[in-house]
Amino acid sequence: MVDNDNNKRRRLVEFKDGCRYGKFGKTKAYELIAHERIRAYKMGGVMERL
Image (cartoon, rainbow, N blue to C red; front, side, top):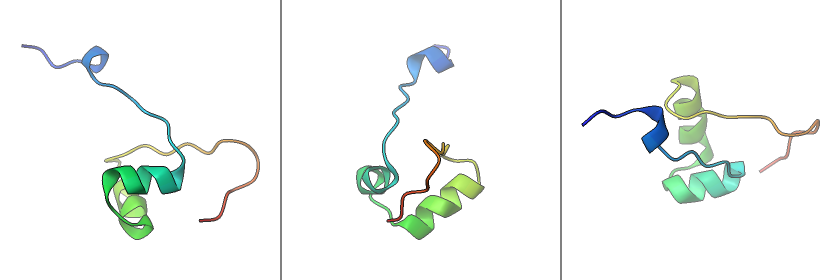
């Protein structure tokens, strides 16, 4: 069986919701983003504070 990108589901969620869904805190989230384990996108012009 071939594992390709079509089989993977991608979800866009807000930062806090992603931390809650992944069961980790914001420090771990930033670490995962830095190590490219999860992707982060900035939506809009103002950064939302946690």
